[in-house]
Length: 268
Image (cartoon, rainbow, N blue to C red; front, side):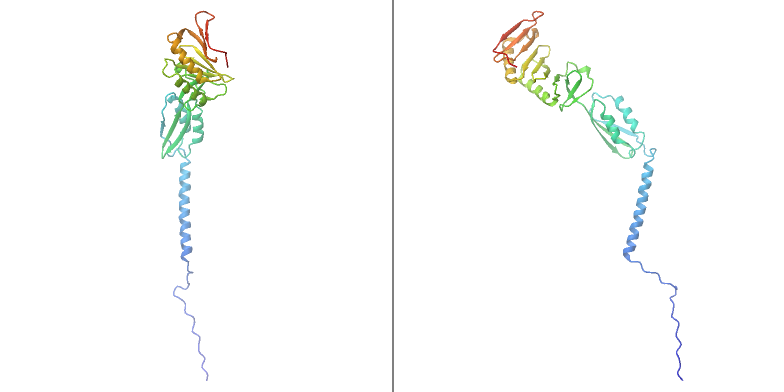
C-alpha cells in the first residue's frame, strides 16, 4: 500500500501580523514636516499675540537729533497719536510722513528697539539765509517755508526769480570773498529777471552790479571804497557799478540825492 503524507499546516508568527517596513527617508521627511508644523503654529500664535495692541505697548519714545527751532510740544502730540499700540502694529510710514510735513523738519528716520522702544531721529532744517520775504534757505541750497522773525537782520536775504538756491548761496560766499578785508557786511544779494546782480551793505547803501563782469566790477568798488568812501558809506544811498571804467555814487545830501560819477559808458 501506498501511504499518503499529511500536509503540515503553515506556521504563523507569534504576533499573527507583520508590520510593513518604513524607509528611513520617509521617516526623516515625516519628522521634518512635523517640525515645520510646530514652528508654523508657533509663528502664527506669536503673530496673533502681537496683533493685540495691548501686548508689549510702546512705553518709551526717544527723540534724537540736534533740535534748535522745533518745540517738543509740536512733535509729541503727533508721535503719541501713532504710538498707542505696539512696535509690530506701528504705522511707521504714516508717522514719518506726518512728521516730515512739519516746516522745520527736513527728514525723519524711525528705528524700532524691541520690545517697547521707538527711536525717532529728526534732521532739522538749518537756515542760512532768507529767500525773499516768505521762505528760507538751508545749508544745501534747498528752500522751505517757515517763520523765523527773531533772525531778521541776522541772516542775509537772498533771492532769484528762478529759485536758484544753491547757485545763489555759492555766489553769496563768493561775493564775501571778493570783499574780504573790508569793514563791509552783505545783508542782501538778489538777482532780477534779467540776471542783474544787486547787493545791500548792512547799515549802508545798495550796490548795483549788473549782468556782466561782476568780479571785475566788485574789485573796482573795492578800490574806490578804500580810496574815497571809507568813513562815508553811511551817507551813500546807492552805488552803481554798471559802467565800463568807474561807478556812480548817489549821496543822501538832499531828498532827491546828488550823484557823483566817474567812469565811461554805462552797461547792463
